[in-house]
Length: 296
Image 1: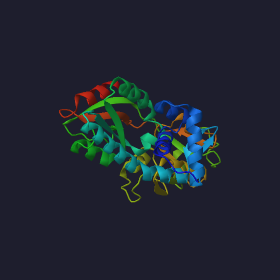
Image 2: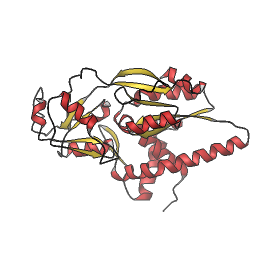
Image 3: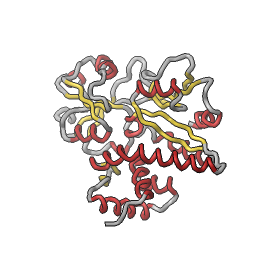
Image 4: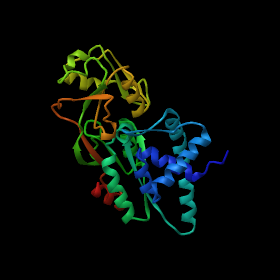
């Protein structure tokens, strides 16, 4: 058994974030075969598969999700210590911290910002962009307290504090998603009132969270579901749906998740449809962070 290196851990985290071996390799300036070989060695060393590879793309296995959740804080701490050491030698690095909703990062919404962030980091070599994943209420708290420089949220959940500025990015599309084997999946146009006996799955690390936000969507669609369940990650929601345990009402889906195992029904727009928004503290944003906002 060979020892596991920090580089392998870094490669694993990159693939987990991008859910793409080619994109992860590009971000690390290495070849895809070299990255794939390193991940394979890591999996062999651990004795488990960390990624599920298929014609529909790459996803984390249960072991991969656990490893990613446990390693991220440690890797951030290591990078912070290394930055401190660099600063001792006069190499001053600056950080921009972006707060992003867990689901946005996992279901593809954040993907649209990645190219702009890479372009920004290329032209600002002394700046590192970090991403913190949280739920909507925590994102607002982190923004107002100064823990993050900006957040990516939706208009219905971002704080309305007068000290916060906002930049609209685009419409947050919504879909009703179910297994392709679901009895209702054969319908061309879904009758939402027939979903009253369904269990709806959503993403949240708090299984006892308030359901008011989800119930507002159901009210617009004129029905109340049988039960609402919360899962800790996007992958776990998709797994539950694919296994026929229930359905979900979710925002934008990256095309890599639109597999033949799932059926997608566009949800009619609400009177005031939620939109993706970038928010920051108006009078307390670093100039180099505002430059990133302007690029997003």
